[in-house]
Length: 233
Image (cartoon, rainbow, N blue to C red):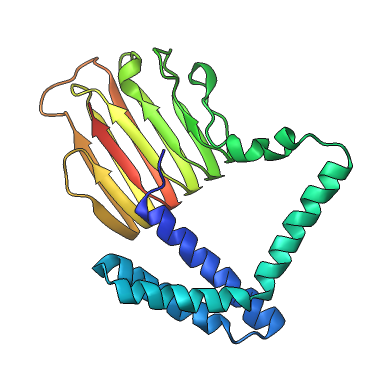
């Protein structure tokens, strides 16, 4: 899945904070302020489609990058790592494999707790199992339209540190949703997306009739930094 605006913004903030800490705290490099001004100018230039702001922001960022010791050390460390792996006879394909394995499909609807992983339901029909999963970084995609829920109540519970959660539901399924985020955006059905800042949203849909012994779904989602989307299709 494509990275959301919240994820990109969070990544930029975290990267900038790390650069400021390393340069100012460890190397005493005051030129990091150029990176700060450049990032602001570039952001507003792209938002307002201002060519001159983008150019000015790019110049400031280039000046800052040329003086960052942390960037030099990072490049040196990456090159040293590649040289050592190649010296030991490791094939280049094996070294580059982690960069290609960005998406993993969970087999047979079985979800696993992983620190860093993107998981999704199979792209064909599958047997339903309640979802109880947590992680640190990664995306979750659940398509409930490709399965048959058992009678009465089923559960989806996801706890994620950084990432996006998307759930697709059939139109006639009663559902209760609890969604919380430290910083993110929540889109529920056809409602206007809502920006959450350490907030929670509760909602239920499809209970305008007596469901009796019909299937229903309870969804509990908690994301520290990321977006949540629940739609019907």
